[in-house]
Image (cartoon, rainbow, N blue to C red):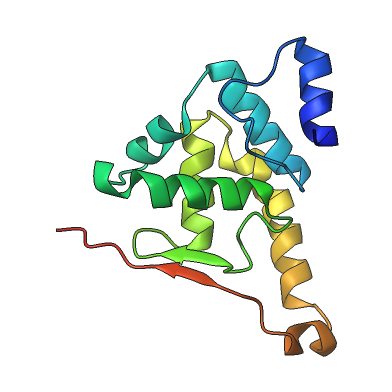
Length: 137
C-alpha cells in the first residue's frame, strides 16, 4: 500500500472511493485529489464533463491519472491528445473540481519555469510521450 494511500485512509478512516489509483507527486495534484473526493466525482464524470466522448472515456481517464500522478502535472507534454493541450487540460480539470485557476496559477508558473530551465543534460534525455489521437467526429 502506498504511503499516499495510507495517509488518505488514516485521515478519512476509509479508503478513497474515487481516487484510489492516483499517487500525487505535486501539492496541487494532492489538492485536486482531495477536492475530487470531497465532491465525490467519478473520473468518468470528470472527463465526460470536459467534453470527451463516451468512447474515449478510458484513455481520457488514463490521462487524468497520469496528470494527477505526474510531478509536472502533465505540463511537460508527457501525455497528449487531440482534445486538449497540457495547460488547457489542467485548466478544465481545475474548473470541474471547483478550484479557481488563479489560486493554482503560481504552482503552474513554477512548474513551467522549472521545465523551461532544466539543464541541457536533463533535456538531452528524451522522455517517453504517450500521444493519443481521437476521432472527434
